[in-house]
Structures are given as C-alpha cells and as structure tokens.
Figure 1 (cartoon, rainbow, N blue to C red):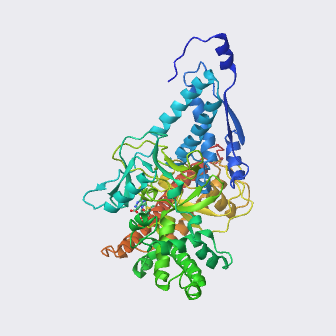
Figure 2 (cartoon, helix red, strand yellow; figure 1 turned 90 degrees about the vertical axis):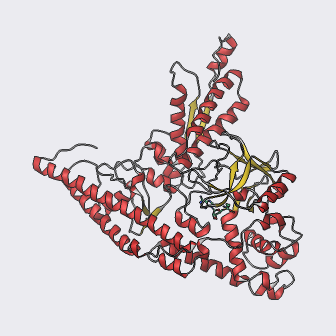
Figure 3 (cartoon, rainbow, N blue to C red; figure 1 turned 60 degrees about the horizontal axis):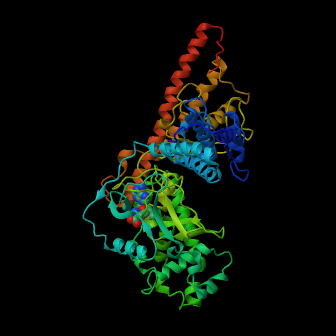
Length: 561
Ligand SMILES: C[S@@+](CC[C@H](N)C(=O)[O-])C[C@H]1O[C@@H](n2cnc3c(N)ncnc32)[C@H](O)[C@@H]1O
C-alpha cells in the first residue's frame, strides 16, 4: 500500500488533477443494444469516466472498484450471461466473467499507470494492489482440486518440454497426468496474478504459413477452402514425417481422441432424446461432406502430395478431433487471427474456474505468446485455461469431456414461439427471440414472479397468455396469469423428462468411455429439467398462497414487489 507522505504544494496540485479511468462499451460489440439497456437500467451510460481519487472515505477504493466491476461485468458478458442476468444480483455472472471483468480493470489501471504523474501513480498503484488482491481471492472455492496420478511414464512430454526450452520456451509448469483429464500442466512454483506461467516463441507455433507451396497450389483450386482446412491436411501428413521440425510434438499426440465425434452406436443410442445427438450427428455429417469434397479427388490428382494411405476418412476424423480439441485462435502482430496448434500450451486443460483467461494475442515486443495468470496458482496445483464459455454439449462434441462443477453455460434451449415485441414493464432485457433455461439452483431469486427462472422467458410466457402489459403487483389477474404460465412450463418440462427417459434404464455397467460420457450428459440434462420442475412447483405454491390471501381479503392488495 502507498504511504501517505506530507504533500508539497506541487504534489497537492497534482493530486487535485483528476486521475480518471474510462470504461466504455464498444459500439462494435455484437450485443451492444442489450448491454446498453442493462447498463442504463443500472444507471450507467455506455461510456463512464471513473475518478480514481483518494478521499476521506476509508472505503474509497472498494467503492470505486464496485462501480467499475458492475460496469465491466456487463461489458464482458456473453449472450447467455446477459440472458440470465436480467434480475439477478450483479455477482451472479460466474467466475470466468468475474476474472475477465477484473482483468479489464487491471489493464486500464496499468495503462494509466504508465502515463501518470508521480502522485497519480501512488493512487493508481494502491488501486492496482486492491484489484490484484480481489483477483487473488476470486475463484469458486467449490471446484474440486485436481488429483495428480502417479506412476505414468511421461518421457515424451519431458522431451517436448526440453525441446521447447532449447528453442526459447520459458515455463513455470511441468506436465503430469491428472485424474480424469489426461495430461495437465502443474505449477512448479507459486505463481501470482500477472505472472507468466508459460511463454512460447511464435517460431514454435504451428500456423498456416507452414503449408508447403506444392500442397497449397494443389488445394487453392478448391473454391472456398479455408486456411484451417489446408493446415489440417498438412498436419495429417506432417504427423508421419520423421524429419518434421515438430516431430517431438506430434509424438506426444494420442493415437485416438475421445471426443463426441468418435462416439459409437451405443453412446448415440443413450443420447436419444437429447440435442447433443443432433449436434454430434450434424458435426459428423458436415465433416464427412467436407472429406467427400476433397477425397479421393486429391489423392487421385496428386498422389505424391496426398498419399491415399495417409488420407483415409478415419485419419481425417483424427485430425479434425486434434484441431477441435487442441487448437487456439491467436491474434498475431499483423492483426490477423490464426487458428494454431501450440506445442506445450496444448497440455493446458480447461476449467470453469480458470487461472488464465487472456492468451489470445502475440506480444509484439517479444514475439512470444504469453500465458499470464489472472488468478494465483500455487506450486503443485494444476494451472488451467478457459477454452471459452462452452456448454457441456459443445465440450463433449469437440473436446470429449464434461468439466467439474456447475457449468453456467449448460442451458437447454426452448423451442417456443417467442413474441417479437418482447418488452414488459419492469423487465431489464428486451428483444430476446430465443429462450432457454438452466439449473435453477444457480439463481438466487426464487421470489414470486421470478422463481429462479430467467425473466426474458417468463415475460415471453406471460405475453403468450395475455398480451396486456404486465406488472409485478399482487393482483388476482396477475396471479392467475402466473399460475397459467407455471403450468405451461411444467408441461414443457414433463415432456422434456419423458424424452430423456428413465435414468435407471441407462446401461451404467457398460464401461466404454463414450457410453459413460453420454450417460453423464443425460444425467446433467435430467438434473437441470428437474430443478426447473421443482421451481415450477414451488412457484405454483407461492402464487396460489398469495392468490388465496388476495381473494380472502376481498379487495385486492396492490403491493409492488
Ligand atoms: C488441449 S488438450 C489438453 C491436454 C490433454 N489433457 C492431453 O492429455 O493432451 C484438450 C483435451 O484435454 C482434455 N481436457 C481438458 N480439460 C479437461 C477437463 N477439465 N476435464 C477433463 N478433460 C479435460 C480433453 O480430452 C480435451 O479434449
């Protein structure tokens, strides 16, 4: 903490000079309108100047930080977070959003620090320390620690780390096997917020420029072929090239990936009645069509460049799984976003409560990709990334796992006719045309008119029942409407439960990895639907009790909730 020294008159003048930080919602944000509305509902505009100034209030730091966080949580939220944010207390966005928000504030303060005068520096430094403290304490304490599995032979991984270090990689991580997630990266020392856990020179990143000229020329005549597909085809061959500069990396890759794209018939049967079945089927059909467009034509026309034995459907699927589950989108100093494979960084597993959230940009000063910590990671702990705000169905299809803990992005889309003029008095969000539910135990507002359910969806149901504007007054007509919408939702959930079938009928003795994963997914779906059903029943009880009170009093009580 900065020490309060007596001020000279010059210092005092400088202290009076405002040190302000501007938080701004970018107009190019695809969710601009929704975020703007939510910011306005909370009394903010899309551009807020926060004055960072020491004041007589001993809580000046936490007060300013609280305001900045409220704004940054909204700016950093995605569509799902906004949908469920409607009437939730502002701390309900989840650990990833919280870290992103704190990280954005930290970056703004750090860039102000670099151009601040001495006195402002003291204040800003104090402010920076408070943010770092908050980041250090953030994180979901409920998420289980990873267990390191002893006794695995990790020669290939050690060799890759050595190769990396000989070629400029700086790492404070080692590779180990972790229970339930294959290899993972473990901190070798205590790492603080802002520390770089891993730094990879761009020369070690597998990018599109590696596709050799002859392969490129053979492929460019395929209209619309992407650089990602070219690189995928390159990796299928390079994997078998004994002289490849990336041989040590390719040697560490598994012979088989266990993603949803490799689900067998038994697992697909378990998924009957779920949207995951459709997602996997569509993804596989898309890949098969892509493969059929390219092969066997390429092998016939250029057998020297595309030897048929290296370009079978099975090997193509392997490469797709590699790229889906291991690639990262990285912005290079030329401004271009490239999909890359990044040796060593590819050992970092995903967590709902990650340590690293910002890793998508090459540092142009060092020409390296840095994995900086937004949350501390102690020696011996697994250091995890956020792969993105993905649902379990997406993670199963493209990565082959379900993360530990409550996944806030596990939503069930609802196929209901949404009214277009989605506006209700008192509603924070307007214009949602698609609706969804998620586990209601994630919500903290189970009161009447909320029931732990998302307000945009409830509003839409209310409008479907009665197009009149709705208020949240305890009036008999409102309460009767509430009973109807809760009954509607209960019927929707009963149908969903029927579609999911009986949990006891799932073949839990089958030890195949894919069947186990499919059963796990269905269990998650059942628990989400069951939580919504419970909320409906509790809500119905609440509303019916209120309605009997209203009717008993004869004259309606008009009380704003
Ligand atoms: C980029 S790799 C990470 C390294 C990987 N564990 C390995 O052994 O190569 C991504 C894959 O790791 C696994 N994985 C990542 N995060 C996981 C998690 N939280 N739980 C289980 N498996 C995870 C999945 O198999 C995923 O497809």
